[in-house]
Image 1 (spheres, rainbow, N blue to C red):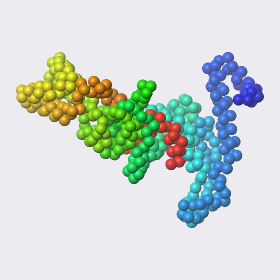
Image 2: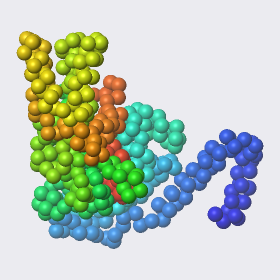
Image 3: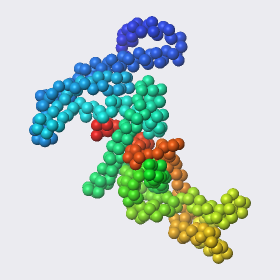
Image 4: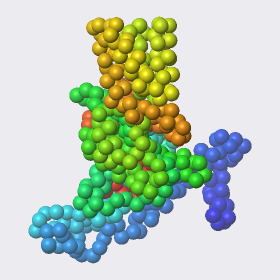
Length: 422
């Protein structure tokens, strides 16, 4: 910055700054307050001098007629620097009675009285925290008071735009059949899938979550998330399109990880048939522990010994030996214990091909779905399952879409498309 300007500022504010000059802890916020006040004044002057959407005496109307310039309408906008007033050109069509304020759309303004920068800051806080906490942090970080209800409306509106854009990508593929470009070209691509629930007004509902991950040539790990409240078929298409963007079609190896649920198997058959399908170790182990508890009770030494012996067989890929062992034990039980063994045998039979853990480990494949288990917590639970939260479906879907936009490093491109004006 020009030294002369700094000297002038120091002279103008000498008295205020002299009081805190020896204490950086007080000097910094004092200078920040001065800069913010100057910034607000400069912003107001620059806005006042602009055309603010004026495009001549008339502009074309969508009805085929013309919108006539009426006057400049005032609107107060809350910015990161404080409140400013903008006088925007207002046009009206006498034929169809539509009106338009070109400045608002061009500047990315929406229904709320928030500037794009302030709105983006609110949403960035809201993808991690409750709306009430986000409002408190806005005040603490920026000294700007935005109500929690305003942040909630904003996050729902902007998140809905993000979700709608994701859906439009899927619909565009259905029409054009053009596969997304893949900047990444991983040698081995993992596609891990799971489901988790969120509490909505009519009960708990499942969000389907996918985590696509890989290592680049420098062994840096990359992850891309997919998450929606929808049926498995719709989710499968979103997952496949995201995997294509992550290099699915060019990857030398693809590994598909899941818990063996029928919908996860169906999407593997539909979209990822060439991928090696692994029932993740955690869920397989969980089924054995459930069987052991049903036979010998929870937390007993006998349960612990019984499960660990059979986990050893499973770890070594000896599922046939494990099945024969369980069938032999089944003959000695009746009632709930026999049913528990029946369920376990059925589970192992269904997923036997996907439980060749000795082979998978020999190839160096991940056999646990830690990535998607973590995604269920990191993507959904961290934001949607905080204490006492009960969502509407539009609200949960919007906030989930917005959070995934942030986690996938798509935040800036998304806001560059001016979602508040969409």
